Image 1: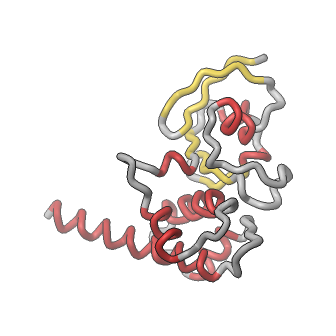
Image 2 (image 1 turned 90 degrees about the horizontal axis):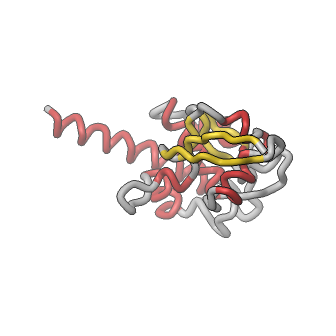
Image 3 (image 1 turned 120 degrees about the horizontal axis):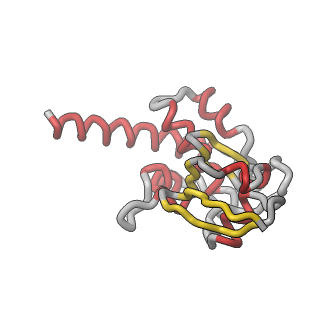
Amino acid sequence: MEEIVLKVNGQRHGLAIDPSESLNYVIRERLGLIGTKKGCETGGCGSCTVVVDGKATYSCMMYAMQAVDREIMTVEGLVKNNELDIIQRSFIDIGGLQCGYCTPGFIMSAKALLDSTAEPTEFEIREALVGNLCRCTGYTKIFESVKAASRAMKEARNQTQEHDS
């Protein structure tokens, strides 16, 4: 066993882990953050996507040891003051989810995109989400959810700027 510290959703967690444990396993089984799903475990479905240092990352393809000294965000980390993030709210409002299993991965991929590209094009959205699979939808509502989140985030930024002026 190895002693490590992971910073997940802004909190530091000291853990004793087997060096072969995936980040997905540690997030779900050791930290109890089950919003990050366990899917194919081969990096092919995207249901385990988290954001590591600002980049969408398949947590099943990363050893927890590789995540030491990095900023990790899971879907639970988007909630602030018991309120859903704009991206989460957009997925609900627009209907970008059905069974919901893949939704956390899509939301985290969208989070990484929208943090780096405030107003992504349709192509940029599709490119950012290409590694996430859904068996229930035709993806249209998922793409529309990301567009709606982008618009809502822009509106929130504008309101903050007006308020600060």
